[in-house]
Each structure stands twice: as structure tokens, then as C-alpha cells.
Length: 431
Ligand SMILES: O=C(O)[C@H]1O[C@H](OP(=O)(O)OP(=O)(O)OC[C@H]2O[C@@H](n3ccc(=O)[nH]c3=O)[C@H](O)[C@@H]2O)[C@H](O)[C@@H](O)[C@@H]1O
View 1 (tube, rainbow, N blue to C red):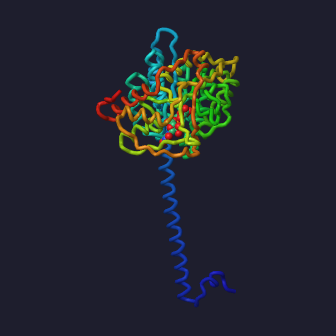
View 2: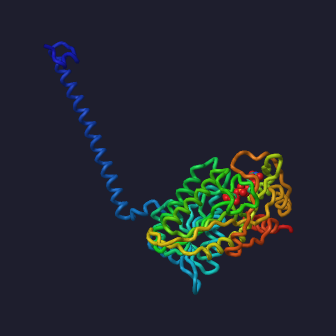
View 3: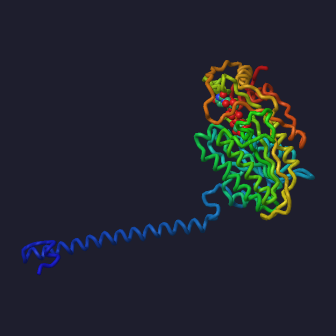
């Protein structure tokens, strides 16, 4: 009977049979040799990985791996920055988004009056991060330490609350911008929803719980056409995902107020502008383009009606933020347990006098002494609303909010800053 080997290697008896046996041996040894080489390589790689991991866990605190925060020196900086300088009644405030436009101004104002301030910012690249770094240097010079970290980092937040018993959180970190929501919807969910919830979780578990003041937006009024916009008007028709995430924030904060007794104040900002502003906003990008001789796009509403905004100057917004903080009342819970009802408030912070976008452009032309090249186009369906107009009687009643800067004056200050910051003609402008 023929063996399997014979079947596979049919041959004549004798010499050929011996050659066949040698061939099988060679194949066996080749196979064995390559298997053992692979085995050795595998052993080598396992050893390498194991030594890397043990190095990591031995020398690096595993909770802080790959993070730019932590350590004794870092904790000292946080603690020092949070130190209250006032004799009596000062606050210790965590300002999120502190390297942002509003965050920088609010942090400086708090520090100036003697409150302790710790900043938090993730320095993302939604717009030029070098501007954020410059704002950070300004804060550092004024004794404010800015933690480089993301709102969604729950361990970082809990660490900050371990180090400092913050009395207040001024939550200004957000993915801003109305039209960018169509390009990058995920970033709005990441910061304005997930980040907000992570922050609220940290606040509700903190002992003592801080009071929270945070930035909502005039955009929550969406398609509402009853003017001026009052806090009692409907806000269930957002026109952009940005607006929808801010509206969601108002509902989410309400839940934390209701369940955990967190004191919440939501501020609906109306198109804030001024020095150290946001380059993505119209007044800023128009200025840049006008100075560089580039055209600007001016949107126009239905039936050729000009768009209008209740542009609000940054110093007025800062006063509104501080007024809200001072009247926020206490959170009632501790360690995640509610002990009683806490304040839940929402305020418009606007200027009460809307200005059209073409008027904004002509004020800029006057201050810059340069004529703009305007492309006037119909407003695309990208989330914009035709106008905004704030009724501020609630904020005025509660904490004496009273805006005092008109667009002409505010833009003059902005242009002066812009020219000096970007190195134009020593910052001189005409009246
Ligand atoms: O108040 C608010 O709730 C919102 O205000 C601004 O949003 P927006 O009013 O759209 O501000 P800009 O982007 O500066 O636009 C101002 C006006 O200029 C118009 N615009 C904008 C850009 C452009 O290229 N051309 C143009 O005509 C817009 O349609 C709008 O009417 C901020 O960007 C939002 O973060 C903020 O939440």
C-alpha cells in the first residue's frame, strides 16, 4: 500500500528516496529555525513593553500621564492664585475659558478687586491660539494662574476642587460661533454639552458646592420675533446647533439646580465685542480685511433688510458678570446631596440698542480711515438670525446692570487695541 508520503512525492526507490528524506529534514529545520527566531523576537518585544510599562508606573504618577497638570509645584501655583486678597467677603473663583475673550476680562476684573482667581483653558485652535497665549501672559502678569486642561477631564476638575474650596465658578469656556456649528458640530457637543455636564458633576460633588455663573447666549431666542427679547419669551426655536447647545445648557443646569441644590445663573450675552476680542467675529474679521485691502462679505436679510445686532461692549458685560456673581446666592447641597432650594436665574446682558451690520462697517471705516470693499450677499441659511435686541430690565433690577458704552465708542477702543496689538502705526486712530 502507498503511504501518504509516496502519494505526495511519487518516486523511484533508492537514492531518490534518501534525497526526499533529506529534503523533509531540511524543511523541518528551516521551519523550526524560523519559529524559534519568531519566538525570540516575541520574547524580546514582551520584555521591552514590560520594562516600558514598569518605568512609566514607577516614575510617572499614572493619574497624570500625558497631562500637562499635576505635581507639587503646580498645586502650589493653583493655591496661590486662588488666594483671596481682600480683608473681608472675597471670593475664590474658578474661571473656565479664562484665556478666551470674556474669560480674560472677567478674570482680570475679579483679581483687581481682590478675589482669588484660577483659570482653566484648553487652548484649542478654533481661532489663533497665539492670541489665547498672549491673553494668558496678561493674566500671569496679573498674578492669575491658568491651568492648561479640558473641561471634560473629570480627574483634573476633581483635583482642582480638592486643592481649593472655590466659592464660585464662572463658566465661560465654550465652543462659540454660530456658523461654525455646520462645519464642526461635534465640537459643540464636546464643550457645550459634555464639558458642561462634567463641570456640573464636579461642582455638585464638591464640598462646599460653589455657586455657578455661566455664559448662555442671545442666540437661544432663535426665531423669536417679539422685540425686545425678554427672558420670558419663548426659546424653543433655535436657528443653529450652537444655539441649541446653549439652550440645552440652560435645561441641564436647571436639572443640577433642582436635584443637587446648585446655585445657577445663566447669562445671555448679546454679541460681545471689544479689545482682546474673538477673531472669528464680524467686527474683528472686518477690521482685519479692511486693513489688508481684502473684501468683506456683508449678509443681508429677507426682502433686502439689513441684519442688526445688539452689540454689547466687553466692559459692560464684565460689570454684568460681576454683578451676577455678587448676587448669586449660595448652593445648598454638599457632597452630592441637596439640602434645600437654591437660586436658579437667567439674565439678558445686552446693550438695548441694536445697530445694523452696514452701520457697524461704516463706523469701522471711519475709525480705520480706510474704505471697505463690500460684497453684499443674501444671508445664507447657516444659523444666523436677522436681529437681536435685549430687554435688560431683569438684570437692571437684580444687580443694577446698566450698559454705558455705545458701538461708536466701543469700536474706537477696539480699533485702538487692534492697531497696537498687530503693530499698526503705534495705535493712533482718528476720532
Ligand atoms: O450674541 C450671541 O448670542 C452670539 O453673538 C455672536 O454671534 P453673532 O451675533 O452671529 O456675531 P458675529 O459673528 O460677529 O456676526 C455679527 C453680524 O454680522 C453678520 N456677518 C458675519 C460675518 C460675515 O462675514 N458677514 C456678516 O455680515 C452676521 O450675520 C451677524 O448679523 C457670537 O459669535 C456668538 O458666540 C454669541 O453667542
